[in-house]
Amino acid sequence: MSKRVYVWEFPVRLTHWLNFLSIAALSITGFYIGAPFIHATKENQFIMAQMRFIHFVSAYVFTLGFLIRIYWWFVGNKYARLDQFVPVSGERWKNLVETALFYAFLRRDLPRSTGHTGLAGITYFIVFLIFIVSILTGFALYAESHVGGFWKLMGGWLFSIMSTGTVRLIHHITMWLLIPFVIVHVYISVHNNLIEKNGLVMSIFTGYKTTEE
Image 1 (spheres, helix red, strand yellow):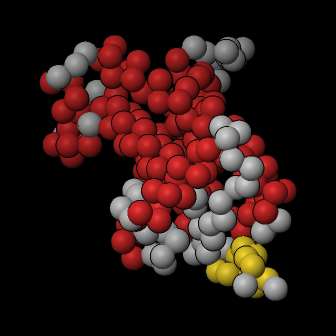
Image 2: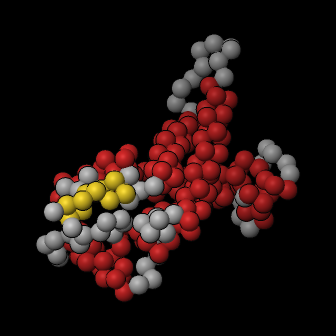
C-alpha cells in the first residue's frame, strides 16, 4: 500500500524555484560582466548597464529566497527543519552513510527517505554555506559603488581583510561551484525518481511524494 505525503511546503518550493531562476540569471549576467560577449552596435545600446541591472535584481531575489529558506529551517514541518540538513541523530548519520555507500556502488539499495536523505541534507547545508559566501562577496563588490553603513555591513567589511581582486575571484569561484551542483542535483533527482517511483521530481511542484505504508 502507498500513500501521498505532503513533504515540501509552499515556502520550500517557492525558494527552490527562486534560487534556480536567480542563479541562472546571475550566472549568465555574471559571465557577461566579467567578460562581455555581446557588443553594442548603436549608441543607444547600454548592454552592460542592462546586464548589471538584471544581475543586481537577481541578487536581491536570491538573497530574499535564501533568507526565507533559512527562516523555514525553524518554523517549517519536520522535512524542512535544520536537523534534516545537519545530522544530529544516529538515524540521520546511518542514513547518510548508507546513502553514500549506495552512490559509491558499495550498497545495492537506496535507503528510503520521505524527505531529504542524510547525504542530500548535508550536501545542501554545504551549498547554503556557499550561498553565504556568494552573497557576502557580491554585496561587497556592490558596496564599492554604494556608500553607507548598511552596505558595509552586508559585505563591504570584507575589503578590510582582502583585496578587491580576491573578493571578485571568490565570488567567481562560488558560481563555478554551484553550476556543477545544479547539474548533479537534477541528475540525482531524476535517477532517484526512477528508482523509488515516489514522485520525487513532481513533488517540487506539488509538495507531495508517494511513500509505502
